[in-house]
Length: 226
Ligand SMILES: *[C@@H]1O[C@H](CO)[C@@H](O)[C@H](O)[C@H]1NC(C)=O
Image (cartoon, rainbow, N blue to C red; front, side, top):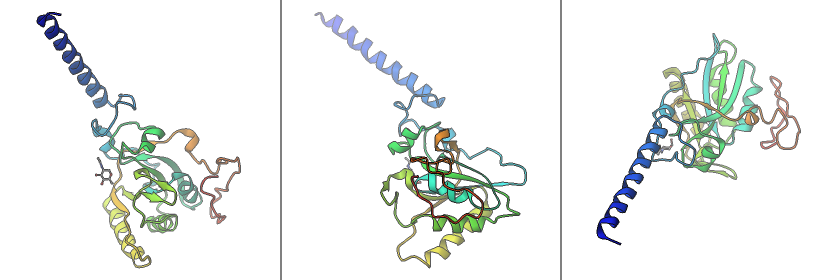
């Protein structure tokens, strides 16, 4: 093999690597890279932007992360004044994450419930009380056997009033627990609705086809996985 041939081959090879890198970068910037290509190295500014969906007239949004979103959603479905609930992924760095992306722990998304409520019927404080009662806010990135950053405890606020109430609520709740609360309180970011089968999962029957009541005011114990 001549030296010249070797050099040309080497040049072609590096050029192709370079082009591949550029095209992957563009795909990811556009937010259409496949899940294999999305990683901490290719964050999307869209994912870090605010949740700009609009709630129904007269309603407000709230977002909570308290471990596996199935049981958290059912708890909020039962609240009078809550007009809609959805489960999804938020606070991560990649656009349009799938369940697998979110669970891989590499995209930094957290499982959240987005609650739409009528503030004339139900106060934000009562939603916060329910949030504390539904999980252990002192275990970092963990709820029981569910371990990972997607299970972190978080309150994601939509305005400064919610932020203030959330911080005061945390202070009050801290008086009642021994260990330090690790709940993060951050602005709500873009909400990525989860796959349809994850929506209202437990009231639809969960794993075993045993429907759990989502009736307003229902106090039946919640089976977290069905
Ligand atoms: C992931 O989320 C955690 C908790 O909000 C944050 O402290 C951390 O900086 C995030 N990491 C990246 C790479 O965005």
